[in-house]
Image 1: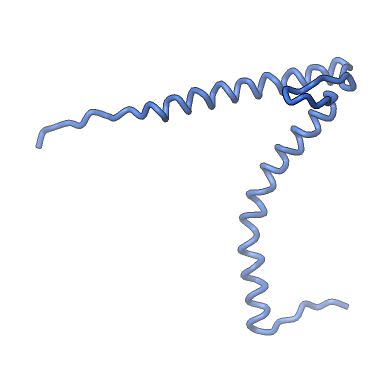
Image 2: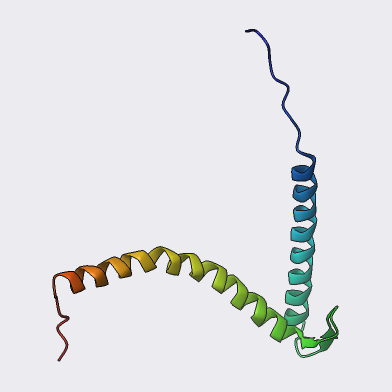
Length: 101
């Protein structure tokens, strides 16, 4: 009755947490380097990615901004989709027409 359980440690959880922190810091470093290059006037200089593609810094910055916008807009669409579907089903069930000239 008076026994206390020792907390179990998840080694895989700790490893994945550390790896995710490293990846986050690396991503922040890359983004800060790209922003610094654009702000100092070297935005049209080309660099080669790890895969061998050539990008300029402005293109990479635009790509990162679009990626963040998608990550912000996608949950909004996911939230609003059931509401729109329910409204369409309601209008179909009760034969309600939109007033369009």
